[in-house]
Length: 524
Image (tube, rainbow, N blue to C red; front, side):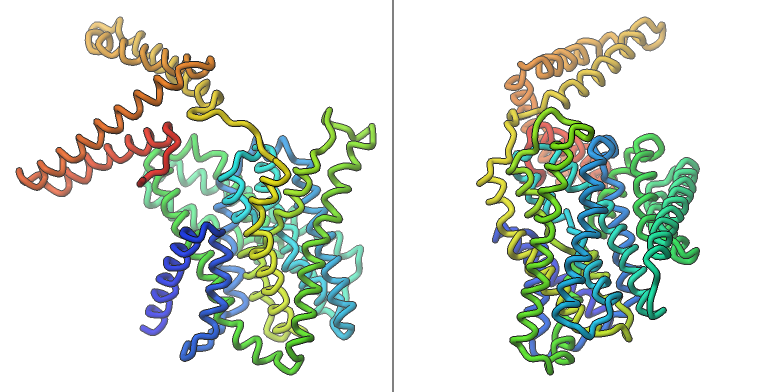
């Protein structure tokens, strides 16, 4: 019963922190990490100890699969070179820089343990970055690069992390052996992830039930991770691969109801898991500080500042040469223009660390050299990037004018896509108008669909935006009036709750569609 109460209390705290973040207009992760620190020092709260194996195996797989599921594969593939330069090159470079600083300041720390610390803090978490970028008119290519980086960099860092822990246990590891292991565990993870993803798709085609299909998506998530780890491969890469496979096939094999159900369930799961890991780390901080108190506040503060500075500066050191040098070498020049200084600044500053780094820090084995100190340093580095970079990224974007003009209302690309849909639906109705049995009904619908096709054609051709918005506003007002009438009928004439829920869900879906077309926020 105590566990249930504790979990409910933590979720309630998550909701409170989310409200604070909304009112303060700050990234949610910043408030979570600060809130976790506050909770850690509240008198009377129990000390929390989290099983290291549970931290990585329970929290990380669903968060990674959710990101992979949403990935725009075409944008990812189109920006593969800068994504890999950041997700592989920057992560390895950052990990080595942090490890070198840690080894310099802590000479007794084994190199493998120092590299483990570097691997923990190396991968940026683009969840908070995306939350900032999507509120501003930032070039979509920049968003695609940063989100694509976040999909792969966790895999790179956690493979390195795993090798470093193995090296500590073995006493040493040869560089050639480590490089070969890196390739093998990555390739094996891809193979396992693809197999699990294919099996999940096979199941989706046969289940035809939203609840069961959503459950299978979670089974696939944890199944890919556990199967890969059991075979000695990278569970993280397996999960990412599974998510990519399912994400690309969802539009063909899942029903509309399943897609809506899975989105709602996965968003809730992401919220709870992300929130819990931040708060759990905060709750463990008090015990960690008590165990490393013999080092003194000045020494701990100096170590934390040095590691955080190395983490932030190393990304700048990597990003600028990696963006500019290929354009200076004629053989590698792929774009007609030089990289923009502002874009390089944004990419360099968009290095907030997050939930995967926290989970990796907690997953360090209990007997690991200087475990408590490494967890403390990782927590401080994550805190520094979230608070410093997370609260100022929007200002950097504005200062360097890394923006692109966006037309109000529906974008031309969306209008062209909707025009294609309208053309196809109109053609089918016109075909059915010749049918002996259904022709009269189809002919009644032709004018409606012709009008819809005309409006979207106008928007796609650069006009008709005002007419579309007026139509949507009128439809929205009529829809809401209909909902009021439905509720009155339910209250006065005894309409059953089951019928009310069914009709209301149709109205809700239509309202969400109209609000999206108007660019409004649902629920406002």
